[in-house]
Image (cartoon, rainbow, N blue to C red; front, side, top):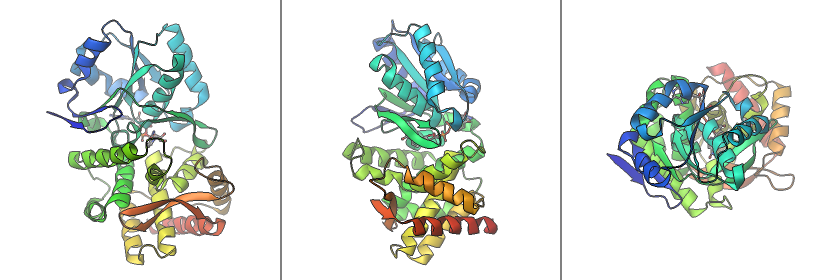
Length: 359
Ligand SMILES: NC(=O)c1ccc[n+]([C@@H]2O[C@H](COP(=O)([O-])OP(=O)(O)OC[C@H]3O[C@@H](n4cnc5c(N)ncnc54)[C@H](O)[C@@H]3O)[C@@H](O)[C@H]2O)c1
């Protein structure tokens, strides 16, 4: 059984790949096309065989392997891959399949959107974060130095196949990373979802198909109403003003994941929501404690905090000199484009630093 998630921009299938429409799409629409699978070093080893077994019609596909890590989500690597596509003599009626986490779907989607002014692609997310967030919604992107996703496009794949089989090989820390976006979706959409989820959060939490489907459905409902992020969709950036700046700060220093940084960002932005009186201290502490149960907070010195603030000032969501962030106005509801001051950023970052002592 596969479930089709209602979404007007592309088909989203949730269920076993072998029972999905993938094989029939290929045999009907891409019978004479060349197929390229984009993978990374891990999904090449751990996910490709299952894809080929589930959909034997594509086992003649060529595979391009991306180097691992956020530091490789850059124009230089994209350029090498575009050269490889050109060497394959890929045509506009050929097809790309992105098999991987958010890095593969972000960069693979971006490359697909610019190669020969756009070639069709399919997303098959293999991380929890990719399944509930990155593969869906039509945002593609690569980083520019320490600035996250500064180059990119809005483009949807022709279809997305979400098969939780892939999560069997996913390390536990990557499951936690995926929960960062599930936490975000719960906190900004529905107090009951957040309260239910917050009680379950712990370091060895397992993926939950119902929760995955709920998160996907929430994201598609927002994208449906504001596909190009002119307004409402900005709420999906909750946790990401701090999160992206922290991730950018670490990108050339140490390996920290997107999900980990989003967890820190959710804490910081919830803390400011509490400081502004939007949520109570107890509500804030519930968020902080839940996140503290799944990640280990890390210290930030003064220099790091100043650098993170400088990165925040370059966030692409800002207007003029203002740093704009999302803040909760209550549990289950969020406002975007909230101007936050330098003093508030410092306060939140020093608070995160203090939390490192509570692990
Ligand atoms: N476009 C969007 O809307 C959007 C939304 C959220 C995040 N993102 C982007 O997504 C990226 C983070 O995505 P991510 O957390 O999936 O990171 P990722 O793509 O780096 O994957 C995390 C790790 O898991 C490995 N992996 C993937 N699938 C696996 C599997 N099935 N078994 C074992 N290992 C596997 C990968 O090789 C990698 O080492 C960031 O660059 C972020 O900016 C984009």
